[in-house]
Structure formats: C-alpha cells, structure tokens
Image (cartoon, rainbow, N blue to C red; front, side):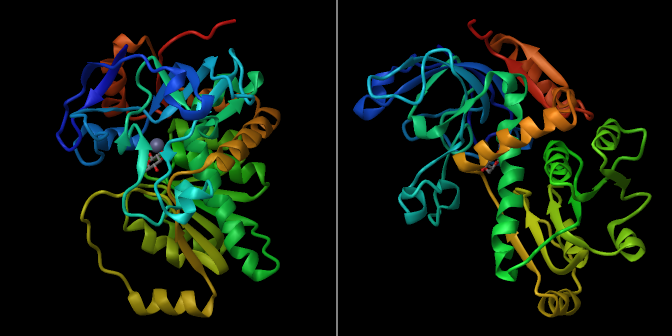
Length: 369
Ligand code: BGC
Ligand code: ZN
C-alpha cells in the first residue's frame, strides 16, 4: 500500500513510499483491529517534521510515515476483539507505551522515560497511508453523529488534557472555581481550547497576533469568547484593566510568551504550557518578581504533552456539547480539505503557505455505508 514518508531530521524529503498492507494477526492474542484510513490532518508538528527539526523513523526504516491526526473505519477485527466491529468509526491515539510505570498503567502520555513512541512523529509510523492495525486500547470509538468532526479529536485531546489536569492539580485547594481564563494563541489549539472553556461557561479571552478582520477572531465571537490582537491590547494591559486570570493556556509556539503569562495569573491560578518549541530562543525575565508572585500567590505552572485515550473520550463529550451549544461551529474549523492520498503534496503546500488555515486534512478514502 502507498504511504507518505519523510527522512526525519532532513528538510523537505517527503515522498511516496510502499508498505505491506498490515494484517490483524500482527497484534498478539487475536486482539488486532484493522482500520481503513479515511482522513488525516496536519499541524505544526508536521511542519517541524518536514523542516527536519523533529522526529525519528521506526527501527529498521530510513523513513517515517507521517500523520498523527487520523479518523478511520474498522474493516476487520481479530477473533478476541469484542469492543469493535466492521463499520465502526474510530480515532487512534498517538503515543505508544514505553517501559515506565506510567506506561504500564495506560498513562503513556506521562512516561518518565527519555524515549517516547508517537505514531507519525517519533519511532513509529503514522497514518498517512491506507490501513493500519492496532490494539483496541489505542482506538477510540466515534459515534456516527460526530464522524464529520472527528478529525479534530486528536488536537482536542491535547486541550482537554491540559484543562482537566489543571483542575486535577488544583484539587489541592479543596475548592477551585475558576471564572476568568485566557488562551495565548488563536491557532487550532487556541480555538479548540477556547471552545472547551466556553463549554465550561468560563469567561474566555484569547490573545493572538493578527488584527481584525481575522477569521479566527470571528469564529471566537461566535462562541462568546473575546479576541484581542496583542498589537492593540497586550496581555499585561488587559490584566491591568480587567484583572488577572484563574487559568492561562499557552498555545502560541513562542516561548517568551510563557513569562508574560506567568504575570497574568490570579492567586491560586494555573498556567498550562502546551507549546512544543524545538529551537534555542533566549530571553531576559524579571526573575525576582515572577518568583515572588508565584510564591505569595500559590500559583502553579505545568507542562502537558500528548494525551491518553481518556482525554480523547472526554474530547468527544465536548464535541457533543459543542454541536448542541454552537451547531456547525467545529465544521467551520475544517477549512482546507484535499481529496485523495495521491494529492499529499497539495496538503503540504497548504500547511506551509496558507495563513488562515484552521485545519488542513486529506480525504484518504470514503467511508463504507
Ligand atoms: C501531537 C502530540 C505529541 C506532540 C509532541 C503534537 O503535535 O499532537 O500527540 O505528543 O506533538 O510530539
Ligand atoms: Zn499534533
């Protein structure tokens, strides 16, 4: 079968490669599920992969099949699979377990090992191909009524993990009722995070670089979030005017923003860091002030990467809520579809050239009835 592969750590090496079609028997104990790939999305991580800044091939290969945002349909199950049947819609998770305690209890997104395995990113082939076979543990069933937006579930799982872990961490407070939250960045992760906050009925302010007219700002209007361009109203100014934030979700990909966000936190507040910044940027900070504010205000800042299946399942609930509260809104994020695996080059072009793109995805195949 055909797949799109790259040579990781070398810029712009994408090409068509051949892989044998996988068989359900490849997963031990009759637990294999064969999935036909229907859609594959791309994001900033794919950009870094194409630029040669990130990623590694699986052992024994000189290429990595890319694609970690996937939606597919079950075509065959092994004899011991009870959870799925032919025709079911699924979204696969990205991480695969290593050997730490966290990996063995299903929280492979929290591995304490240096090496991590991520399909389409690091040491495991991804989904930009025709079929894959996996264990049911890594497949999340998507109800028919949400199949049209399921390609957004992997990025949504990242947002949900960050938010739910903030609540989990702040159980230390006995009572924590955040009311005002900020999102740094109005890209796909920023938009999905804002949605998750609005579904939780939080006053949500999103900061981005672009000035209006800006499509993402209009999308935020539709869900009752406030958008500010930092060119008109920087974060610090908003804090001065309307007060600090109980939670700040950082999703700009620009690490200096982290230190501004630290200053924007209310007492007992939580700062969620989600940007994967592969570079070597340096900046000067007011260390004493930032430190004392954190100490005297009992604040927390934590990093969050990837997501295990529980957060994908929670993300589906948010999608259902979103369709009820803001019908059709998520569909508007699906801005740049491309039809056919053979047109993979066009998807990469969109990824690099289109500024207003909220999601570029490839329609690899059509679902069966
Ligand atoms: C993916 C995550 C992954 C992270 C770091 C993101 O783009 O969505 O699944 O953990 O990159 O590799
Ligand atoms: Zn991603």
